[in-house]
Structures are given as C-alpha cells and as structure tokens.
Length: 357
Image 1: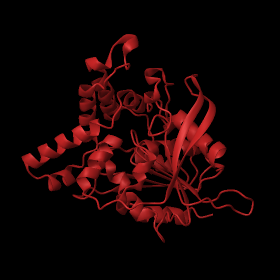
Image 2: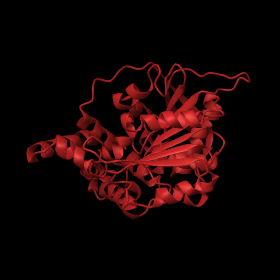
Image 3: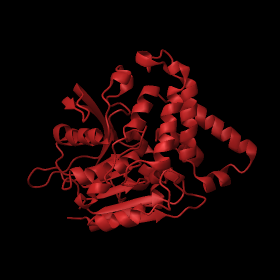
C-alpha cells in the first residue's frame, strides 16, 4: 500500500536514492473485457523497465522478471534504495545487466487506467483476476514476453502471484510472493479494508446516490480516516517503539505521516483499490501451482498474522513451495518488510538457483 509504504519510508531514514537507468512506456490493450461484463475500448498499462530483453536461439525473450506492487502503490516504488540497491546492481540477484526487470503500474494505479482519469465510479469494477489478465496481455501483446523468469509480488502483488500460479501455471519459472495469504480476504483483514472504504464514504464531501464520488474537492476527512487506518495496519511495533520512544516524537511522526500521505490520495481510486480484493480466494485450487515458489511473511505483520495455520497447510498442497516467516525484531518493518531486501535477499538467491532451467 502506498500510504503504508510512504510512512515506512519516512521511518527508515534511508540513504539518498540511486538513479537507475529506467525506461517507461504505455501499452494500450484494446477491447478489454472485465469479469463483471463491463468493457473498455482501451485499457492503458504503464510499465517502467530496467535492463534489456535477451532472446534465446528460438528468438524468445528468456530473462524477463516482473515485480508487482501492493494496493495503492506503483512500479516505481521498487526503485527505492532498500529494494533496488540490494538487487539490481552488478552481481546482485536481479542484476539489470542480466535480467529485464518489468515494473508495471497495475489497473487502477499509478499511470495506468484508473477511475480518477475521469470515469470515477463509472469505471469498470475490476478485481484481481482482471488485473492479472491485464498483466498477461501487457506481457504477451505489448512486450512480446511469453515466459517469465520470475514473478515477485508484495502484498496485493503477492496475491497476484498466487493467481498467476493458478491461472497460468507454466508461464513463469519461479514465484516469490511476499506478505499475503492464499485464502479469501475475511476476518480482520476484510474488516480493516471495509473501514477504509466506509471512512471515505462517510465523509459528506463524498456525496450520495448518483452524486457519490463526483466531488469537486477530495473528501479530506474521509481520506484522513482511511490513511490513519492504513498507518496502523502497516505499523511495526518494535521498530516504532525504538525509533519514537517518547510521546512527543510518536505524536509528531504519526501526524506528519498521515497528513503527507493524504496529499497523494484520490478517494475514487482508493475505494476501487480496496474493493478489488473482494473475489480473491486461491485456496480451492492451490494444487494447480507447480512453479518453484518461495513464499515469505513477517512475524510482525498486522495484515497477515503469524499465528494463522494457513502456510503450514498450503505448502503441503503446492508441489514446489517453501514458506519462511521472518522473525520480528526492532529492525523489521511489519507489513512493509516485503520491500526491505536485506531480510530476504538470500531466499531470492536460493529460489533463482533451484528454479534454474
């Protein structure tokens, strides 16, 4: 989530970001049909890339890696130092001299087609299946990619990785989902998401009936409620206690983080982003996932509680899956640990080695 990630980035006091040699392009998918039956004559997918495609003797691209962001994020979040500087350099696991790194903005996010482009609440009601379908068409129709070396996904992107594994089981050589569960979003996970949506809609500025979402100015009170919930959901208790050990420091940080986060939000986009998880439930078909997988969660993740028995049961049903739970420390970042490569870099290296073809 971009709101959570912004807060975590501010906590980190990270070094200045290195400038990476990126390219950007828009890929327009014609006549896109959503699972709801709604259609768009053109669906725009924006993608940032690093490195260059390599082709095998048959002319097929064989070095593409797709990295998928979380709810409210975009592809460029993976250019932050805690991720990029650990992975993209010479000799590193995703060395851009070896791999072609694809960082898409998913439907409803970033510079891809989204409600705030003008349709607002008339935008098609997309879900995770639609988002994965758009990624697939972006790859095959727009980029000429028919096979991926790796799909790496965080949070929502983690869930997309499970959908990919079931929907297109032979499309990728490896899967690395980070910070999610392969079950229906229910219980507390659904509840806090619903509170985000309800917080926005309860703001009088949101509107009612046919005027809902047709505001002239953003419903700031509703967005503040939503951003506050996101801050809690993404928090890392031990890290925050260590970094903000007094009442004054804690109060100043959370107030500044919430206010800064509101400035980058659009209420229509946010509601769609959180509603898009409504149909997610890969649990019944986990056996369809056959690609080598390393799935990692964090013990201090509010969104994916460490005491759920889901991972133990799930790995038994997937042919080549391994699971690791990162222990909570005063340095881990809660849900946002998924973007700090130092905690799981060795796991990525091992996955690439055991999935080498």
